Length: 546
Image 1 (cartoon, one colour):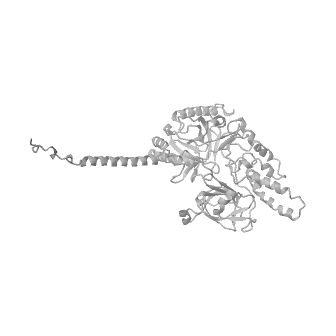
Image 2 (cartoon, helix red, strand yellow; image 1 turned 90 degrees about the vertical axis):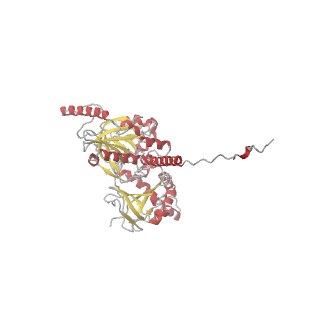
Image 3 (cartoon, one colour; image 1 turned 60 degrees about the horizontal axis):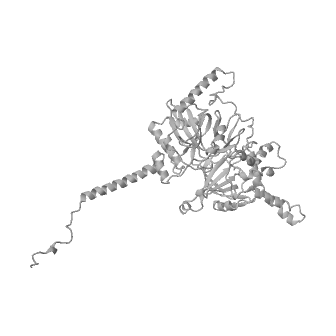
């Protein structure tokens, strides 16, 4: 048998090599490049435009967006305060495309908590009268709280939607407090209400939507108590702007027109009792006064009661007949001017109890104010201070924090949405002639915040830049060198100096550089340290002008 004729193993084991399809690979690479480019552009579209409903929803799912936060008066973003006429002139001349870009930027800044702001934030000031109010729901941009539709007293061509975000527990009291006809008075010294949207109506009028960045507390002089605003956890941007739609405004304006006709026909009688409407002319004297009573955050390093306790202990051994030892114990009571100064601050603007519950007064010190007040003080302020000492017993009546309401003084004819505060009066000294005390720089402020003043007189020196200036106070920041900014020395970027000036003084203008040395320092009254490490240093001017 011949086995040589058949060779089954002559075929190669490997398959024949195929040609590479370069066209298919080119198409695949181009598709991948297009996908990468689309993802890159989409990320810019989503992250750079969070005011769009779809972008906002995606960022929420990715946990790349923070809810709106509460600002403090000294930490608010830089802005400009516009009255009704200025607001109307700014937005009425814009075209449709320009107004859309402006609204996108306003909403974007609010959603980003004003971290990347170009230019100045527009804030609202002026007097407005509430025309209508309603509760916010799931179909609104802000899903909880109330919104008030107001018209400017000085300019009838401007409407304002003032948003009051709050928790559902505060709604019953808010409905009783935010009544129609109430006057909303926004002042630059106490209110930081930012414009987040502007719209042009068919008849040429402008309506702006405003939200208070402070989210403070409000009360009325003859009401049940106090309600506090809360920043919204999320926004429902699908609902759209403005909050009062066209059909709602038409109904409100129709009722308002009927009221004006009846009011014109009956001039000798009183106001027509139509619910939901108020007079078009100058509003009558308000029976209730709506006041913001922003309370300060409790501070660990500053507690007036322990200071008073130490003074009491030091006051007991003084009558003992111990000669030199009794003399050594007499100087420590000089530390009492610090609490006494705090007791005089609220009393300087007005004797009403509203000033005591202002943002500058810490809650722990309120019950001890009568003990610090000198004995020969007039009897008039006593009724204003005693109800504040009894405030802790009132909140048991309602689930929200409640303060007792006092009758409005006869002098207040209009309703104000601001706390009363003004320049105080204290003793000033020539350069270098102030009382003895410890002089520190901005680098030692954190040590003072940790230990507290402890009754010690401390002065502050340094070079500061004015960020905000008002009638009786200015907000400054320590001026850091270029090397300190690069190496993060000194902590100037996280320190704010709030300077209060006495009556008759003119604060430095915004942008000015202030130099204070050992001959002309500021006197420190309080140092507050926030949870994020921010230092708020409250000082006052004690030097006489040159």
